[in-house]
Length: 70
Image (cartoon, rainbow, N blue to C red; front, side, top):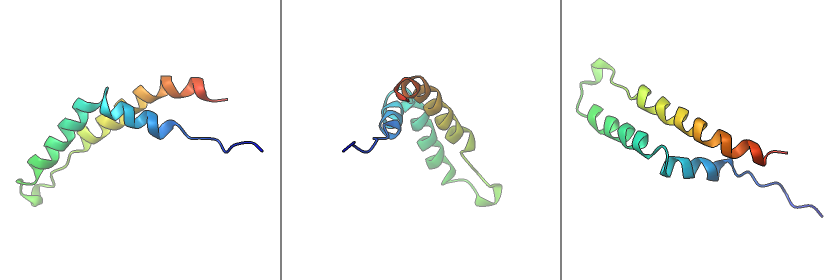
């Protein structure tokens, strides 16, 4: 009986978040803290920092994931 396939993408993404993208995560968390004190009527957001993390994880994960695919 064959084993079920294992999705390693989440593990690779977690490793990227902890290493290569750690500064972007820190910047995002700092932004979240900063906007807590801003008037909500100004519609504060941290979109730029969030999407910087998403992009970083994609760039980091891609070269590690593709060689493992069959």
